[in-house]
Length: 131
Image 1: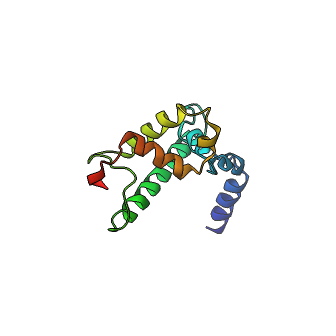
Image 2 (image 1 turned 90 degrees about the vertical axis):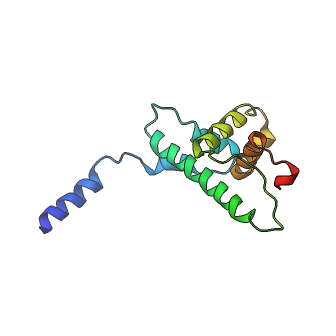
Image 3 (image 1 turned 180 degrees about the horizontal axis):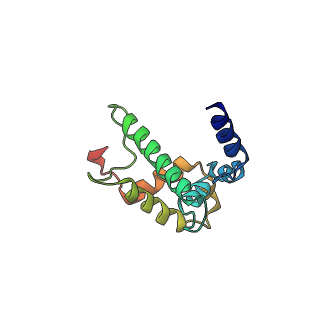
C-alpha cells in the first residue's frame, strides 16, 4: 500500500502538469485588458478551460458583490439587467464592450471590475426609478 502511494506521489511530482505555474500567472487580473485577454483565450490554448472558468468566476463574484451592496437602501445599482440574464450574457456583453475599446488606453488600464461594471451598465443601464 505504501509503495503504491509513494509511486503515485512520485508520478504526480515528475509527470507533466496540464497547467504550469507560468501559465497561471496570465490569470492575474490587474486591468480591464487582462480580463478581456482571459475571457477571450483562444480555443486552441491549453489553458482555455481554466481561463473561461476564471472569467466566469470573476464575473459572478463581481455581480454578486454588486447585488449584495445594492440591496441596501442607500446604495444605488450600477446595472439593471433583466431577470433571466445569464453569466454568459454578461461575459458576451463585457467582451463586445471591451473589444470595441481596445485602443482606449485609459479604459483598458482601469481595474477589471471597473471595466466589467461599465460594460454591464452600457448593456443594461438603470432607469432612475430602478436605482
